[in-house]
Structures are given as C-alpha cells and as structure tokens.
Amino acid sequence: MTVILLALGAACCLGLGFVLQQAAAQHAPMKDYLSLRLLLDLVRVPQWLAGIALMVVGMALGAVALGMGDITLVEPLLATNLLFAMALSRRLTRQRLGRTGWGGLWLLAGGVTAFIVAGRPQGGSRSTDHLWQWLIMGMVLGTALLLAAVAKREQVHVSLEAALLGVAAGLLYGLQDALTRISGEHFGQGGWSALLASWQPYAIVVLGVLALVLVQSAFESAPLRLSLPALTAAQPLAGIACGVGFLGDQLQVTPGALAWEAAGIVAIVSGIVLIGTHPAMPPGAGRAESPTSHVFG
Image (cartoon, rainbow, N blue to C red; front, side, top):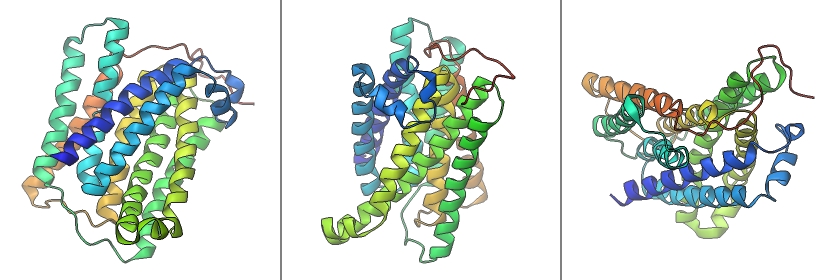
C-alpha cells in the first residue's frame, strides 16, 4: 500500500507539473525548439519553475516507490498522472467531463487495476546477461532518438511532431525509471560510495535533461493534448519492458492472466488518448498546423 500511495503521489505532482510547464513553454521563442537554450529561456519564468519543482518532487516520490516496489507495479500507477492533469485543466477551462472524459477516466483506472490484479507483479533476480540488458536499453534509447530525429528533420504536421516528441520523451523517462531502480539497489547495497561509483546515476541525469528538452519542445510547439497522452502511454510501456526484460520483474503468464494484462494495457492507452483529447485539456497556442511547413532552422 505504501508503494501505491507513493506512486499516486508522484503521479499527482507530475500531472500538475506538466500543465504548468506547458502553460509557460507555449510562450517560449520557437528559435529555441529542441535546443538547450529553451531551458535557459524557461528558467526565468516562475510558472515553469513551479511546474519543474512539482515534477522533481514527483520524480523523487517515484524513485522512492521504485526502490520499494517493482517497476511493473509502479509504472502503470504513474500513468495516472493524466488524471491529475485533467483535474487541474478542467478547473482552469471550466469544461465538464462528459462521456469522453468519464470514459477515459474509467478506462485508465480500470486498465491499471486489471493489469496489476491480473499480472500480480513481483520482483525476482536481476538478469546477469549484460548483453541482453544493453540490447533492451539500446532499443529503447535508439527508438527515442529516431523519433526525435524524425520530428526535427521531416516536414510533418505540428500535431505529429508533438506526438513523436511525446513518445520519445516517454521512452526516455521509462528507461530512466529502470536505471533509477538499479541505482536504488546500488545505494542499498553500498551506500553513497557504491552509488557514485556506478554509471547509472550519471546516465539518469543525461536522460533526464534530454527528455526535458524533448518535452518542453513538444509543449512549446503544440497543445498539451497532442503530446502528454503520447508521453504518458510510452513511459509505462518502456518501464515494463525494462522491468520484465532485465530487472527480473515477474508477471503471471497463464493464458487468462496474459489476456487480462493485455486488455489492461489496451485500456490504459485508450483511456490516456480519450483524456488527452478532451476539451478540458488546455489548448495552448502552439504553431499553426501546416502539412508542408518546415519549422527548423
């Protein structure tokens, strides 16, 4: 229960923080798109700093939850950050939930419940096959970088750019969560000396900065509903893949359990999409939609 409460607290902070960040990022100059200069511009905006503070608290709570529980349990719960983002957005826009909002809410909540109850995630021994571990991490990182490159170099719709950046950032955050779990194990075994002697904490920082640039660029370029659902859906999928792939997390694999787990994941993604496209999500300004606009210099 402690792990669940910590994960839900993390989701609350993340969801509220994302709304505040997008509200500030949409006013940033487009010349800083997908550049570290974007963070230097935003750091002078109090609203963005408040959003970042909430996100840092959320990540800290998530790290504690990952240290106490399994990533296959924590990641689906973190996906509920969209519910808290919707709550704040609904208050700001004064939109009613309606069928779409309630449908998305129940699908997301029901999907998380179905996955956890059917899968019964539990920890196991971490894989000693380092080649397999590096392969999975390389696939997640490579996919994220490829999506970011497509968003930057191709002449695509603004909505597609934001979605691609959202997925890329979500994959990086999922990988970051997996490395956070490993870092927690190092700290538990040997304290600060063991933690600082490992490479994972430094990779976490690099992944965090890269993901932050992708997220803020997506928030800057398009409404929140075009990027946050993609980010929220991709993060737990990447985290679960890492958890089962090399962290030793175990799920029930009976035919019935697998069916419910798959149904839970489908419901989670469907609920995220419905909530993310609800009118209550702040529209933002973003760039004008154009199928042929090449917006990068």
